[in-house]
Amino acid sequence: MAEKHIILDCDPGVDDAFAIAAAILDPAIKLDLISTVAGNVSVDRTTKNALYLVQDMKAKVPVASGAARPLLRELESYEPWFGESGLGDYANGDLVISETDENAVAKIYETLIDSSQPMTIVGTGAYTNLALLLVEHPDIKPKIKEFILMGGTLSQGNMSSVAEFNIYCDPEAADLIYRSGIPIVTAGIDVSQKALIKFQTNDQLAGFGFVGDKLATLLKDYAERQENGFIVYDLNTIAYLRHPEFYKSRNYYMAIQKDGPARGASVADLSDRKDTNVKVLTDVDSQQLNDWLIKELAPLSKISE
Image 1 (cartoon, rainbow, N blue to C red):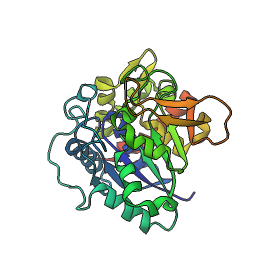
Image 2: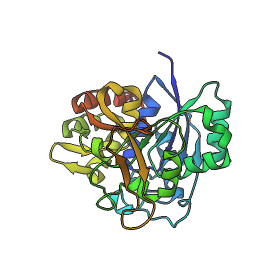
Image 3: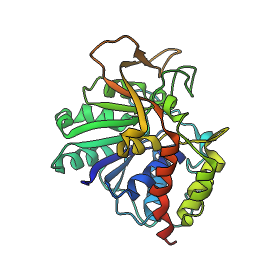
Image 4: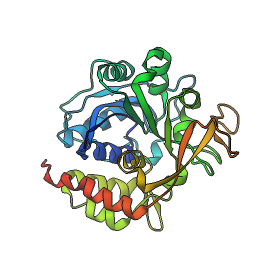
């Protein structure tokens, strides 16, 4: 199987950590770049969190630090979700690797230009870096195969009654991405609430070496707990990339509400219009997802401190 070359733009974040781990470990994925953005916490912290994960997993993946605030407004981070650091107590100890000299937008552009084929960009934070990429480098669109994004909701939000966090954080950036004409797949709140990581799955994960134990502890301490498991929003982007057959979807034309009490709403046209712009993941086989995650993260057992 040919490797899928991807760029992962993120704001770690507990659920981002699972997406990063899966992308690093999957033999069918070549993670060419991790870029960071302000969102869950400040960009300094999200960058440090990404570096700790790369270092602990002994991976050779460049990390580029990106936008410190949304395009047109001040950052409204939400530390209470994942602790002051954004990654609980994970980001401790000596950090001996550092981010690239180039900022995230420049490094994403360089990575795309150097690729012989169009690449998939996975986004699990606010879309600020991705919007800046398109604004500063409009020539780059042919080098982007698709965006696979965590974000949006067809029903209930988690920042307001209608808005999901990533889009609420920078609705102007989301609007630019949704109007870009580049193929988009979104794993939003609707599917994430069905894609529960079971408690017994997390117990198994705790036995996968020191990184597995750290990740399992993060879920127990910080992830949103439901009756049958934990919600790990961002993981669905990588799971879909590797196994789209796990998911059901529907194509919609979606627009972003940028202002007012409905700021951050991702409004889907429910008619059968043909000019759709987003494939929205709507359902998932959660058992297949859990079985995959165990196999995906089992190699953590071979990583020593």
